[in-house]
Length: 235
Ligand SMILES: NC(=O)c1ccc[n+]([C@@H]2O[C@H](COP(=O)([O-])OP(=O)(O)OC[C@H]3O[C@@H](n4cnc5c(N)ncnc54)[C@H](OP(=O)(O)O)[C@@H]3O)[C@@H](O)[C@H]2O)c1
Figure (cartoon, rainbow, N blue to C red):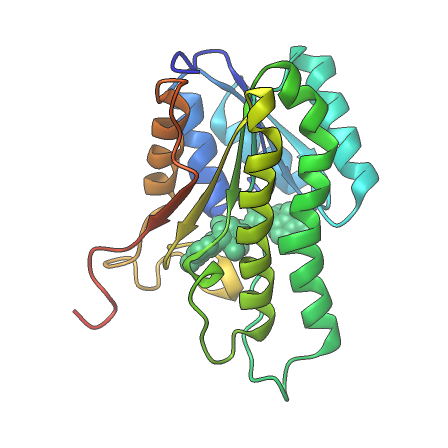
């Protein structure tokens, strides 16, 4: 897929943060992009900021039928789907005795089952274009830490899911990569994008990596990409 102009992408959770940064990078390359979020108005507003080749759709990744509907809408509008970015995610961080069952369930339902749903709903369309699936995991998908039981479980699971998916669909000429960022400036976990802006990865950096992956010669693809800030909070 090294010529990516006019290719069509669906980004789950593209209203802000990393998903929005990926959408901006794709639009700059001439792609057409559908972004989703749980709130229609927020999704449409974000899409407006991206210009005429973007649409904003309401969809909760924890609801399989809403994922199917989004794919149908994209196919009706543009007739094809080339790229899925399974990005939507939440972060609840607390010691195990303070983590609620509701926080556990939301983390697993969004970060793991939600990715399964978005992949399942778009797979036939992606196979027909010999397209690309990229999941946004995290360094927390291989490195565990205190207060991270729910988040680590969801992202370790997502890393395993994505690698097994890659082996399943390689025969169909569908490429699969998981991007595993360290700390990114965004609204993640309720923080402000301004917080730690001097050292954190920026959403546009993940956007740049994503378009670089899509532009690679079709014979090759990196299946796992770890991304780190060059500095840490303390240096
Ligand atoms: N920020 C980091 O340091 C970091 C590092 C590594 C990996 N990641 C991963 O990167 C991904 C994006 O996070 P971010 O940093 O960009 O956070 P963010 O700024 O909070 O953005 C999260 C996005 O996910 C959407 N979302 C959340 N729950 C959803 C659901 N159930 N259905 C549909 N959309 C949903 C949000 O949209 P609405 O609120 O409009 O629904 C928003 O667009 C996540 O998977 C996260 O785990 C983040």
